[in-house]
Image 1 (tube, rainbow, N blue to C red):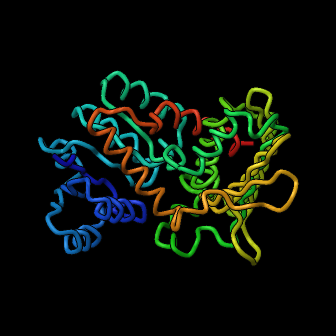
Image 2: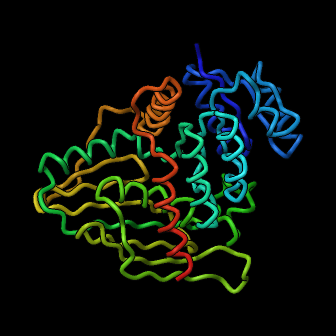
Length: 319
């Protein structure tokens, strides 16, 4: 029997999850709700059989809801996640848990006390690319790691395909440090362990409502130095890159899922057998969500792992 999913929030990520779950085929797209009635109608028209709730509580508390997927803006995650936990549902939340660290700590305690399964959507948890890098770190192929560099740059933030999500441009809930770097912070801790800030600095525009334009951070992960830099503005292609510098072999992750390696020469493509690594990543993640729903072992990160990422991100944003 397919697990029944209730969708809270039908913006960019909500639509993406609906489409990917439909493509996957292993889920019952049962319920949906958004504060925008027009968006709800559009989803109901497009996805046969999905039922639009009168409010979020109705679909969270529905007897046949197995998993509550939360994809609204971050500040509202806490309330819906707590309600889902209180209803005994599996809680599947977009990152970040929130923007107030104290509230997110309380959320983690609440969800854990409720005893329900809880995970956050960090796709690197299921990524074949990251699994490949982790394996090469573990088997000695990389050798000693002299450093890990993360570089992000966006000519325009929010990006054109995010234009409808106005909150992404605002300091209160948005910004690319929360939206993009958080994924790389999760990956960093997954590969090297807890990260500590050695130094950090963030630059903001004159308008106090707007999110960051540039940031820099030096982290330490159990002796591995991690250098992070990001910016927005200018012209040119976006840059989303991470490089692990090894004494034997270095690995480069480009544009989220393209893996390259070098033993001193030019970068060589790894996992070249994958035609569409992005789509493969979506399906691998949903395979793991299905395992979660069935009570089987899976690699998806719990709320507590996402809290560690949020603490790191919010600390950087205040410096």
